[in-house]
Amino acid sequence: MVVDGQQRLTTLTVLLAAIRDHRVATESPENRERINELYLINKFKPEAQRIKLVPTQADRPQYNAVIDGIPATGGSAVLDAYRFFRSRLVAADDPEDPHDIERLEDAVLRGLALVSVTAQAGDNAHRIFESLNNTGLRLTQGDLLRNYLFMRLPTRGEQVYKSTWLPLQESLTSDELELLFWLDLVQQDPAHRQADTYAAQQQRLNKLHDEKDIEAEVLRFRRLGGLMRVIVDPRWRSTRACAYAWTG
Image 1: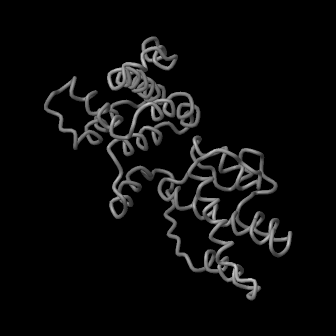
Image 2: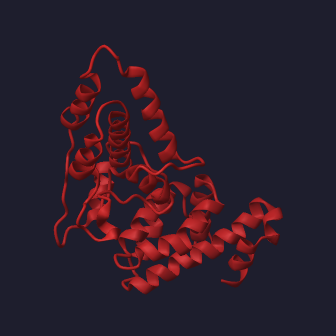
Image 3: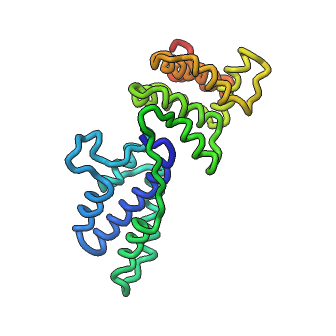
């Protein structure tokens, strides 16, 4: 499980897929198998582990299509990145220089530094993530709470994310999610500051020790999110998703 750096690894592998496809189209078909086998695909693994990097559920279909070389339509950040890289490779490829794209591939694979911190049994990977993140782009209170919740769902995280969290995330903006988690605290204690939302929610959730209890909290947040969606946009009240928020 990649705790920090998922977006960077996703971007890097999409770039490698773009280089693969460009070199297949302009040089030799053997580049497909070479790059796939070395960097992108576990040929002899079960289907769920065949592609070496598994992104979040929202990006997975488009990402898998890119790695498998399957034409994909529509829009997504993954597809946009792949198309961007393909266009830049075409622009950078000098017909008079047969080795320019090869040098670019070599720079990507050998010129980038990667720091790998591997957690061992008993380590708190979430704490490590928080420490690492202090040196990069600061996440929202909602981002931090999401990461914490799913670190607490080691066996149920995949299913809970797809069935419960993703619909919540898609129904509210990042700011609205953060506001939701703060209001959830305020109803218990009006003195809670919005800037301390994550710390206060984490302190509250630390009292729960069963994975089922954490899953129940995610479900509760989704129900509250449905109610907040109605407040933000009353027209949403007639939708099926809203009906779920009221009935659970």
